[in-house]
Image 1 (tube, rainbow, N blue to C red):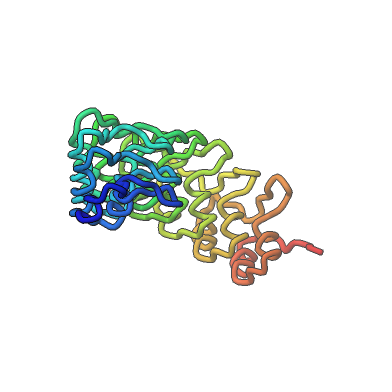
Image 2 (cartoon, rainbow, N blue to C red):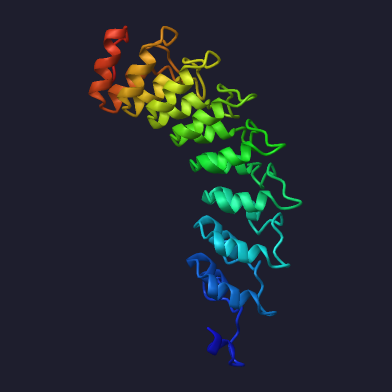
Length: 287
């Protein structure tokens, strides 16, 4: 690197066909020494994004290269709360990548907003919850001003994202927070329980049903209940759990007048059919 950089014809901040600079690659691979050399040059822009909008810090934070994160943060031109072309701040990259040490470093800095939403209205907590980063979730929840139930532009909360992706640990943490509504639906009517049932996340379904605020027979979106989604996708375990609740109706039709059993029959889920019929589900006449 040093020998090459001594050559006049070498551009130390040149973009390749992917819009990536040398410091971008060095940060992504965690090459601390190379990052130090490059960031010490006046012609290198440490905030320069590549074609997908990610800056060098983002590559380092998302891959857990904390020492590179420290080197970049020490540079005067690196603003920890300045968004990149995707409206993502340095703290966003650390939270989304699950880098607890980088998140702590950034949160201890000045002028950093831990609850700043991105262009989609999603907070750092929302992204960390979606990716199942329990450590970062705990760190963010310990910050003053962070709303654990803040919805994004489509009405989804951090709990919704965690439930949809089956992150039991994060769901447990969020359910323990004051102010979190375990049955809040987004704009189309999806509740955390509906999303968990759709994906077959038995552990998450059990945790949500343990809360009295959660309606196990919620009929949205499109009039479909959690049982309807679980039956349609053949999630036997979730079907068993839901059928154990007296509030759940095995014959409840949706807006298209389709019942859970109809979906199970159409999709050939024989074990789900066998589970539904003893609970009073009527055999559909499907041609």
